[in-house]
Amino acid sequence: MSTATAEADLTVQTAEGAVLGRLAGAARVWRGIPYAKPPVGELRLRLPQRTAPWTGVRQAGDYGPWAPQRVRRLLPGAAAKTPMSEDCLSINVAAPAQPADSPLPVLVFFHGGAFNTGSAAMEMVDGSRLASEGNVVFVSMNYRLGALGFMDFRAYSTAGRTFDVNVGLADQVAALEWVRRNIAGFGGDPENVTIFGESAGAMSALTLMCVPSAAGLFHRAFLQSPAPGAAYGPELASQWAEQFLGLLGTGPGGAVEALATLPASSLVKAGDELSSKITPEAQPGALSLAPVVDGSFLPLHPLDAFEQGRAHRVPLVIGTMENEGAMFDRLHDILPTSAERIRKMFELTDPEAQDRVTAAYRGFPHRKQAVELGGDAVFWYPSVQAAQAHSGYAPTWSYRFDYAPRAARAAGLGATHGLDLAAVFGNYDTGTARALLSLGNRRTTMNVGHRFRSALLRFARTGMPGPMWPGYDSSTRRTKIFDRYDRIELDPRAVRRRAWDGYQGYR
Image 1 (cartoon, rainbow, N blue to C red):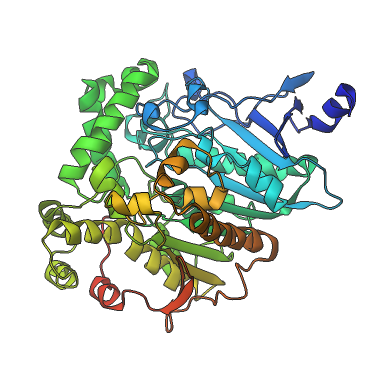
Image 2 (tube, one colour; image 1 turned 45 degrees about the vertical axis):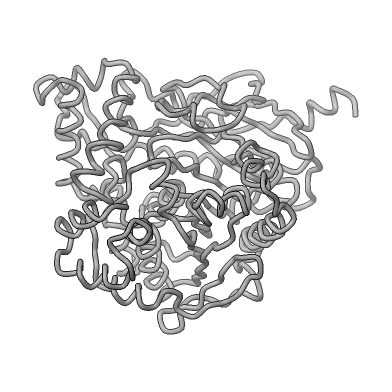
């Protein structure tokens, strides 16, 4: 293939202008395409605005800047060398090397990181292999994080300066609108879009199922370890905004100047301190950087929207890891994984539920049971609530991922939060995956990953994750268990589920 022919195959005309991608292994990739104007200056803390058209051909071979954050050094991968900037609203596309004769299913991925860290440039979530092996078009994007994306400063707006809310979520809607306008040019089918994500990325996708402006922009959702309770009303959001300003060293009178003019690094530092130090002690189990139930962009708490049948009625796959809390107990201490934090969580949310729930964890308050309870409170039980509610209105499937490589078991983590990323992307040659496989189990690990990844791809193509995976309903609660040998269980953890029934959490 000549250079001229190759460039012709890799140049795509989008609604805003032409972009030139490159070959990456068995995939064509386009990276760092702006999908909205830079959210800087007057657009800081404002809803995203559609990007201005450009002339000529834009080089699209490298990832766009990471959203401002503090812990990027802890996120593995050569792509971590990518710059960091408030001008971070870019989108990436990967497609098979050979164009297809008919439009391909589209998979849109939202990265995780507690709404505070992460990037689509992390090597573990590179979707080029998924696109080539799965014969799909893969899309990922960066969106605003931390205080710049997930805090509510509306109360400090003035006649001269307005602050919007949920701008990080609105970025994701803008990216989906870009997909709707442009993905056909990359070989994708805009009428067959599956959104998926892990952790905060899964919570993003779940929340978008409850955002009216996202209606029609996607057709299926595959959610890995969401925290469905992590959306909060204006009262909690305003408390956190006030605390945030205190960390910046200013009060309401200086809010506009501080929020509008301080360097992004100052806002990142204050948001990180609030979310990683203050909130876990003051309100264990809550995330101060999270979607806000504002009554308009997000009219209802997601769990309420699911319960009332007001979430978008698209097919849904939702699941969690067997031991969600272990990773946070070891590496990122933000969950209620101690007896004292658990006591305070119930005190602030549902005191009458405390004895009932803790009795279901034999051995509590020992650390192991406290860690299990904390992970269940944030991830597992709210996911059960979402599944049982949505199953009354749309096809729903539930899973639990129980498989852990020998190295994860040896470290005392088991099948913990985030270990399914290698399975869904198939990127077993990344640094993190190599560490997980350092004590062996490579063949079994890859076999489990292949089955999990195949379920995602089958779901994207057909709307069903597989013939051996029955749907979820509130009577049988059939759940797929991914392990060395997969199986179906009826109402897993039934005793714990019944103990949690009726618990609402923070609102």
